[in-house]
Amino acid sequence: MSNMISIDAYCIPCILHVRARELSKYIDKRENRVKFMSKLAINVATYALKGMNITKVATQSFRELKEYVKNNDPYRDEKDLANIVAEKILKSIDKGKLSDFSFLLKLATVGNSIDFGVLGYEFNVENILNELNKAVFRINDEQRILGHLSKSKVVAYLLDNAGEAVFDRELIKLIAKEYPQIKIYVVAKSGSFQNDITFSEALKLGFSNIGDNVKLVETGTDASSVFLDEITPELLEIIASSDLIMAKGMAHYEYLGSKDFKLKKNIVFMLKAKCSVVASALNVGLGEYVIKFVANN
Image (cartoon, rainbow, N blue to C red; front, side):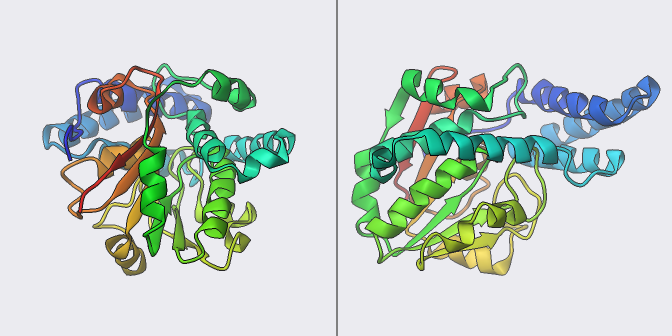
């Protein structure tokens, strides 16, 4: 894959800033916050110096935070709210549009603007339809995706944020209906990573009953992406045998688009470039959207 992504100097303060913000919600005592962040800074620096994958560093630092604040799901409330608001938005959308592949592909991608895990980036879920109207899709490989879906047998669809997942569900529903020959595996995390949707939350959103050819599977881990050395043997087999991976969000791009992901796969990256490191790796402007098909076999 051209433009492989690697950890950059900007990633280090970004990860630490997000952890510091989370910490302030749970730990009142200034001294304890300073102590934890100082230790975390040393750990993050150590991981970065070893050349660890960006999103592996983010995962490891979030695990350390969860353990310290004794909370297994620090974003639970934000995630619940994002899902409620997204369902409300969905109800307001003209029904005809929900059978339009082009519209749903864009809606699912714009859903990626719902994120709490990037330094200097904030987004209100309510604004999603305005965002859709003004979104710049610097790369939109829709035609290549359609061409590929028509000859695919197995597709792995990797979910990302809560809220956004509501729009993913509608896109997956349409793909399942239009391409009954495809077995679609929808992949959600087993444990919490930032505001990403978990398996149990995806079940509540009805992902287990959107089509006979759709199966919701979990990663077996709380990692930000499908780290090949952490996921379940079942998921490893699914990913290895998939004809196409549809990957939502920056963390999946930071992993699947790096040298760490050793499998040669056709991948569609659907995301908003919310930071300069990802924008520059994709060769797009900050804040622009990408529906990028990468052929790897």
